[in-house]
Image 1 (tube, chains in turn green, cyan, orange, blue):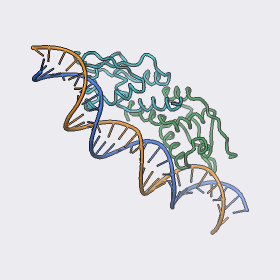
Image 2 (cartoon, chains in turn yellow, blue, cyan, purple; image 1 turned 90 degrees about the vertical axis):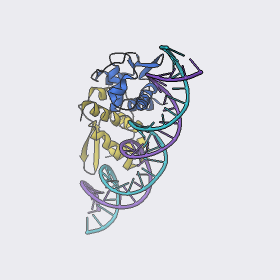
Image 3 (cartoon, chains in turn yellow, brown, cyan, blue; image 1 turned 180 degrees about the vertical axis):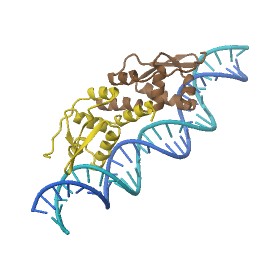
Image 4 (spheres, rainbow over the protein chains, first blue to last red; image 1 turned 45 degrees about the vertical axis):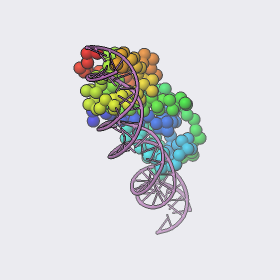
Length: 98
Length: 98
DNA sequence: ATATTATATAAGCAAATAGTTATATATCAG
DNA sequence: CTGATATATAACTATTTGCTTATATAATAT
């Protein structure tokens, strides 16, 4: 994939309010997938699909933990993605007990 | 419009290879709209529509000059947009005589 | 093995996107 | 005014997006 198309793909991954909220939740560290359903107020499958897009763009990484999946920001980001993350306000939310 | 939705709107405006190319062409300064048709290899109306999206996101500004329209990057950009522009490689192209 | 729970996938749908062609508008030259 | 040229708008189309509901998969507890 050409440089410019990779860039477009990554930017597309972050150009949605719900996916930006996911990133905002992840600023403080790892989050269990189940927590996002209440934050975004969309169905569990919808959350799963949005997380998948961010994962495919290599913006977040996944860590399976038993029945759960924990997500965190990729430690290495393209600078133009990092700047976006830096300018997001953190979102606080109620965590599940997992 | 909420902060996060404005951010999503602006990121959506730059999350397309053709619109990134437009921005890359504009890095060196003002460009006549007609020049973009050859760079993108799409129709004139398509160019007009893409420029409109960037303009509506306030990423570029327009300067009418007779029959022509000249475009340039907005001098004031959100930091997360500026970083994207900074990481684009300039594109050189043949300029019309206008 | 069975039931429970977390997540993923599939199928379907409405809306948005990115192009096309045809036509309209606007400026300029003669 | 007439014709030429630059840009914009309209109408159309195929594809993509972002959700939904229903179902499948996977891990855990009993």
